[in-house]
Length: 225
Image (cartoon, rainbow, N blue to C red; front, side, top):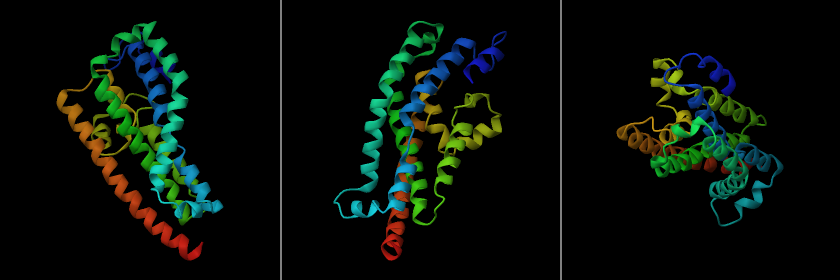
């Protein structure tokens, strides 16, 4: 996608995006996308259908936190070579001028909260396996929606205004696009604070929803499992 958008913006900037800015944006999409990517839905579904989830119910720990820590450890290992590759892009090309390191700390917070949001969405999707043998469909739907509405195909600022307004109230822009906009210096102070607060609200709401669905699913599993 980066090559396509760079070609479009070659002769004239597109909504402020030059080829170099597109390079910066998609390099960050690659990095942040790898950090936040989740296999929670697949893992939870497999554990439920295989019966392995039963042994976890006997252990004195939070099952959602167990999967979360596993996802985090996997992300830390996975992202190391990608980090150096992306760092090279910014060091040795004009893309570097679009990286605002003064926003590094809020951007990192945005990535962490985006990671949690994405994990919780996929974890909730995996819990559908308590009721359905086709829970993997939720995984696919989430992936498509994140791709379309999370800024992976294109910067969301290139979308029609009415669509941007709707997406602002959905979780998808806050997983990848929002942290990228922070580090690229595209947000005002008010937008940054409001965005981080909305991320925190999403994490809280999704955590309660995950706990509710988990409780209902375990009761069903105990009866029919």
